[in-house]
Image (cartoon, rainbow, N blue to C red; front, side, top):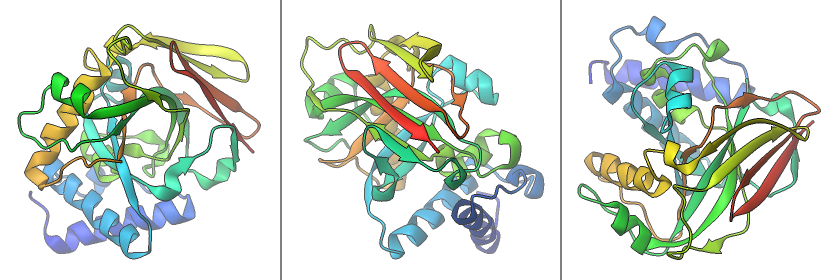
Length: 262
């Protein structure tokens, strides 16, 4: 970490205000050019503490930038992670105001539900499979409180990995018959497919992304706990949405979910 505690608090407040007003701010790394990834996660943790103090509940974690399309889109070369709060989880078929977000995009993912804890630093894919109770098709609404999505890795990490909301389908028991690496995801807007991809795009297997997360959380003293949801990362690139759009994510063997923007 290179930023002082006071500057970390200042940067966190900028993002917090931007989130509450749905009004983006300029690139943090332009304002604080010395920021490193450790600073960015510290900023993220400050805002998590603020939101928990306001009565929100931590219900899970999200992994971002796991696939080549998303890394290419944002010009980064490693995953990142953020948190999921109770208010961020939307029912399938929800209608949400577009203006509650800054510049939302949507992407299809697999959500994991754990029935046993995962604790780094040496978590494997096999550990993830053993600890997973169920999986579900999910659609993540990603959003950037950084103006015009002009991001570096540090910007998106500080901004809770560009989180917005998640729509999760029906949970299915995670059995050996479910091959997430071979599963195909389809992302559609208003009934037209805009992109598709395989689970193998997510670090080779979405379960591998969950293992990566458990190990990445270890230096923070954080375990993934039973009952928590993990959004494992997008199979495809992310598509912008506008008022009047309906976004749909389907994953073979898992089903379909949708959300409408008003």
